[in-house]
Image (cartoon, rainbow, N blue to C red; front, side):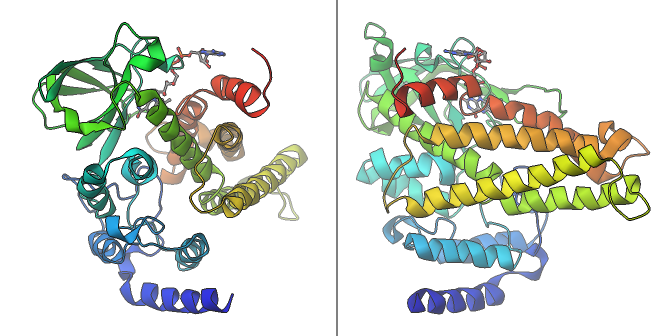
Length: 401
Ligand SMILES: Cc1cc2nc3c(=O)[nH]c(=O)nc-3n(C[C@H](O)[C@H](O)[C@H](O)COP(=O)(O)OP(=O)(O)OC[C@H]3O[C@@H](n4cnc5c(N)ncnc54)[C@H](O)[C@@H]3O)c2cc1C
């Protein structure tokens, strides 16, 4: 404990000294966080400095090994760092699928050359990644994917279409599932490939959504040449890697909505409750509608309780423990909770919560509406809620088919 307290003091001092003043209090959500990458732009100049300083210390990926650009922190130290950053209202220096999905997967399945090539670049925010799993005919039934990779000497030639590829138009590299053995049982003919988006033959087309701007893209591969050395794990053994990455993805989603993100979301709900008191308050300064009041309190309690549960699971996980099928439980609950919360926020705002644009709505009102529409995707991304319930039934509870 004494050692951790020393670490806390030193960490706080370092953060106070090194965090540029203009990043304090910046939001850390998908839209406003720093994703890094070859084409990164910085609306807040201090963010770049923040990234460079934190990366130099290995604190963009605090618990990854130092030799690959991480901070080498023990779980307790990483937790202290996160607590101190929250306390000082400092946003993460970097977010994205490199840190949360492909990085942890490479640590487990990548060979030494791949770890050396990619992990440092992820930690320094030099490369932004996207995920090429889903296809027009392969979503929940992912193993039906048809994008094919045919061997040609030291390369594969990749042809096919991926869909719902979030941020493909901004990404530098994609991790993709491709079919390398069409004759094998469907899970057995899949390979996990790392592909540079600058490779000739790749084209990306954005998709528009109900919530306005969309991160989604269609990604086409037309005879794209990819070196065989970019296979993660083994040829035709990509399904194992794919499942492991999905475990990381589901944990990341649960953490964003219930764990690390819970404080921020609770604060936003509290702010809305205050606003509702102003707009819909009675003489005593309470929200006049008792049902609405009750629902806000319940939502706040559920969010806090779930935040503790996620934290307990994290604390309980032994060092090196990787998320298994139980990550589906967190994924379902976190996303259902977030969708309920977003709906409640819109209801709390009353007529101001259904604006799309134009006068009469504040920026915050419009953000609430758009976030509500965005949240409808929560029960789909990373595997739908129905499919998670199937996984929980079969692989966690051991129920028969
Ligand atoms: C916000 C968001 C971001 C995404 N980002 C990415 C990304 O970056 N990269 C990527 O590759 N993909 C991405 N996806 C795609 C996502 O992984 C798929 O949409 C998802 O796996 C579901 O596939 P589908 O859309 O084809 O639906 P389908 O699989 O066609 O499912 C349709 C409906 O049938 C139900 N269903 C299907 N099978 C079963 C079953 N066995 N039992 C019970 N119910 C079933 C589903 O629950 C769903 O309600 C993203 C999706 C969203 C919403």
